[in-house]
Length: 310
Image (cartoon, rainbow, N blue to C red):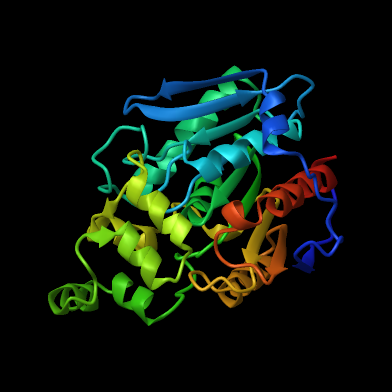
C-alpha cells in the first residue's frame, strides 16, 4: 500500500486521468446479475450488481441528499463501476427510496446504521473488502460509517462536511446551537419542512436535475428540519483520528454547496491527525460530479483503488 498522500488538482478532460470511456449501453452489458434485495429489520433496499472476473474489492455506494439508488444518474454510475470490474452495491438509506421508515424523517445514526447493515450483508455473502463511495450527504454518512467498522477497507467521499470537527458557515453554526436553532425556526430562517426542489433552485442546480426531483416518485421530496439538523450535530463514539483505512476526498472546484475550501480544511485536519488521506479537486466542476463528471469521477475512484490496494 502506498504511504505517500495525494493532493492533486485536475482539469476536466485534460488527459491526466486515464478515463474509461465506456458507453452506458456497453456498461450494462458487463453486469452478469442485477437484483434488489431487502436486508435488515427495517427493511432496507440494497441494489446488487455482480460481474465475472471482478476485483476482490466491492463498491458500496451511498447516495446523496433526498436521493435513492434507482435514480437515473445513480444507476448509470453503478452500472459504470460494475463495468470496471467491481461487484457494486447501492443502499437506499433509512427513510429514502425503497427502504423503510417515514420519508424524510430520520436521525443521522439511522443513516449510518443503514450503511453498516449493508456492509455486514456484503461481508457475509461476498467478501470483507468493501470500499465505501459516498456522494454529497452520502460522503458524510460514509465517513462516520467507516469509523471503527472492520468490514470497510477504504473510503471515497465526495463532499465530507466533518461536522463533528468543523463548522462550514454561520447557518451550520446556528443549526448546531440549540438556542439559535430554536430562534431560527421561529424567525423562518430554517424552513419546515425542507423542500428538495426549492433548495435545488436556491443553489442554482440545473433545470434537468430539478425536473428529476419533481418527477421521481421514489425520491424523498421533503426533509423534516430536525432530521436535517441531526446530520450536523452527530458526534461519533470514537475520535476521527481512529480512522485506520485510506480515505480519498473528491470535490469540485466550483462546488457552491460544500465549497472545496471546506474540503481542503477537512483534508488538512485529518492529515494532521495521521489519517491516510488523499484529496482530488476537479477544476471547472461543481457539486453534481456523479451527474456531470461521471467518467472522471469513476476513473479517479478506480485508479485510486488500484494504486492504494494493488
